[in-house]
Length: 56
Image (cartoon, rainbow, N blue to C red; front, side, top):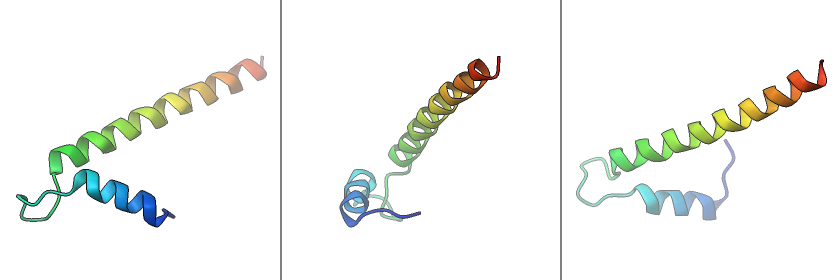
């Protein structure tokens, strides 16, 4: 996965947690991952719908 330093820093700042023993907020991290997966799923559904429509 390629990610710019700016994007990396933004994500790092979003999920970091000083109070966590591993340095990240696990709940926030999981919410961000699930949100991204929902966006991917919606995009995939739109692509599939376009493909279905073009093959009719």
